[in-house]
Length: 546
Image 1: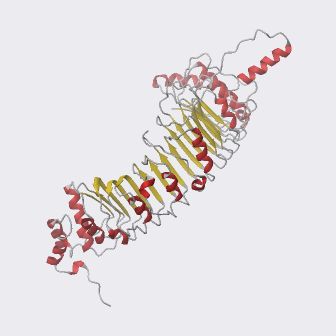
Image 2: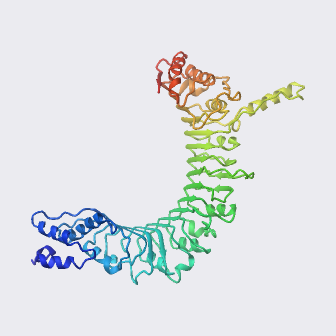
Image 3: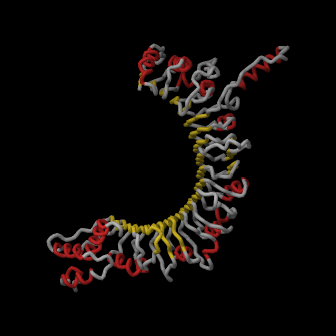
């Protein structure tokens, strides 16, 4: 068998001559390594960063380059990060990859400099991830390809040639994950280059720039198995959707994330969602740049919905703005909305977990839609109870009974007759004037409640006379048979709160633990003293104070 000749078998003078032909030659580093290679063989590191404006980083990097040539170790380089300020030609960069072709993750940060893509990367069969940041690419070499690449990030990349981005994507046949961040992918840039990303499953368009209609459609047409789509826009100069792609481009998408959406009109969003025939997960984040008023979310296949709308409220906006949600298969619902004045939920029998923080003026439009809920976290700051007055036209018994029916409906902060038979865990915010009435109603309609947590996300009007506890006429079944855990965070020891706490402790037959905590250390000892005096029907209930 013929022994393979390695570089470290050559004379030192010849090795030094070879090293001197590499860019950024460091003679002292090379000489030091060569003098020790027979005593202590050089061990490769798996994570390397090179900054050409940092002398220490450059020396460390060249030590890696020379060590790669001298080492007998075939260790795979996990990550190589090149942060270069000066422009390097492909001939200067190529030797780095000829030295070590086993890199898995490669990143270029060029601070706006031009990158000549090294053709030798086409022979790198281990490269799985490529990140280009602040890079200008004039041309993609003919025949350039990244045959094993799975993930590509183009972050602030400027393609000066009209077909460069298409040529680059065409050379990634196994690409599964693509991010375009502040990078142009305009329709005209594709030119006549045809490509198809047959393996692409995840596409992120983050403040991507395009100026003509059809760009998004053509890009999506090249991704026949796309499952995850993220579209984010952070400037009013560019629109997310010049036109809505046809349903044929959206049929495979299962997860869709939309941030700061800008479209022609509200109907565009409805059309977009309607085209996603397999959609299961939807995330909507609204900002001040968002121009959609009412999101009409009618998706029969949707299983998870997350809404975040905490932008600054427009004071001069008197029209309705919010969400209309019709998702009969929905299972998980998360809403954090401090702006909308309209939220309407159609009946959703499959929802088992919901977290709702909403300032909506009509909470009755969504609370009663969650009859199959198992875990509910609710903060509705407008669940108020209005003022009742005796009508002047009450003249007979039928009118009196009618008025009492009105009172019962009035005191119920959601649709009358709603029952939550599967609800086991309830978190309720005490920040609204009508929280006590809401709690009373829910306790009466949740026979299987196991855990109850009260908390305050916001400043609560504790002394508001409308903030009354409407004690149930009959002790709720959940207190008699199921409730085991009771927790009250931000407990302020007010008269109203003590009345509620006393009622629960006096009627929760199977309660095992009751935890109270306060924001004020000065009120702590008074809180403990008052609560310890309350009657507890459960002999095994443990009081915990924090």
